[in-house]
Figure 1 (cartoon, rainbow over the protein chains, first blue to last red):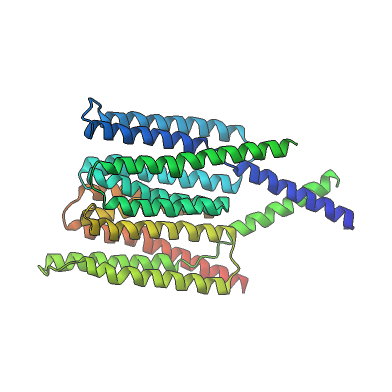
Figure 2 (tube, chains in turn orange, blue; figure 1 turned 180 degrees about the horizontal axis):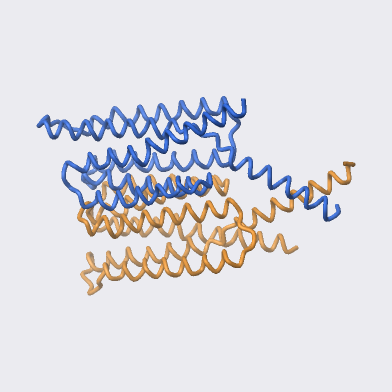
Amino acid sequence: MDEKMANDELVFIKKVIEDSKRSVAENGFGYIFWGILVFIGLLSVYVEIALKAPVNSNLTWIILITFGWVYSIATNWKRYSKKHVKTFAGQILMSVWLGAGIAMTIIGFVATLSGAIRGFAVSPLISTVLGATYFVSGMVYNSKWVKMLAAGWWLGGIGMFFVQNINQMLIMAFMMLALQVIPGFIFYHNSKKETKHSDE
Amino acid sequence: MNEKTALEELQFIKKIIEETKKAVIYNGKDYIFWSILVMIGMMSTYIFHMSGLYFNYFWIWVVLIPIGWIFSIYNRIKLREKHPSTYSGKLIGAVWAAAGIGMTIIGFIGPMSGTIKPMAISPIACIIMGSAYFVSGKIVEIKWLGNLSFGWWIGGIVLLFVTSVHSFLIMALLMLFFQTLPGIIIYRKYKQNIAAKA
């Protein structure tokens, strides 16, 4: 193989890797979507308990989480059936978030219904699970700032274990904005830049 | 580059990637060690409670969990010395480290703060284990390993409703079937792979 051919091979391999990287590039929509859903749910609990407003937060949660699951399954189904090439990293990310979603749904609904955990235990537990999920996602993206989000969720979870009053909902809602919705917008911005860059 | 060469190159790259993916090089010792530790914790709590020996059982875990972490770190260092780390291997390590950190926070900080009842720790740990197995199965592309997640999730849901002392016994059995036995299978496969390579 002469030098030119070797160079061609390298260019080709680089292109394959770049394409693969781009398909892993997260558009951030899932982060923003779920972040806003949970933010609304948390505010509904706060409004019901702290402000004594006529809001049924249990019903709100059921509607929000069911809507979230149906929408996520439908959009991912569409997205993945269109894509001919499924990257390894993309598949792992999907399984990481699917596994976390199942765990959080069991904790949020079954665990509270069974009476095994109190209402004020849900947010710190979810926060701890999210920490683990962001940690693995950070490894897949090979991104330090995503791994740092994991530390934020874990520290927030530890803090919330000691806040056993309604203010815990506000803390969790704030964390949802800071550690989920805003990172979602950063992903969105990066993915736009990546698409623009690859189109040039 | 003509089409035939490109195809051959692609096939070669694909083969290398597939081989790297499969070469997770995992000896399963963590699975076995942790499961034995947790079984010791569960069974001793169960036996002490059944025989009327009451004390703060929390201290059993204060001893066992650091032993587990020290072993896991030691095992990882030893594996790194023996085999080069692969992308899949790193991911598996991240999954179990993250699950371990999560379970340690919940198991220690939860009851210390008074937010989590001690009886709720096992079911929550089961639910997290389910997710860790689910992702691990996808990483190594072994269906049976991924399917263990359903055992953990169902076990966790059942344990949420079992508030008696028997929950310790159920958790020990879950550990035996969904952690120790898979760990032994992985260890045997690892030994076979090493022998084949030698």
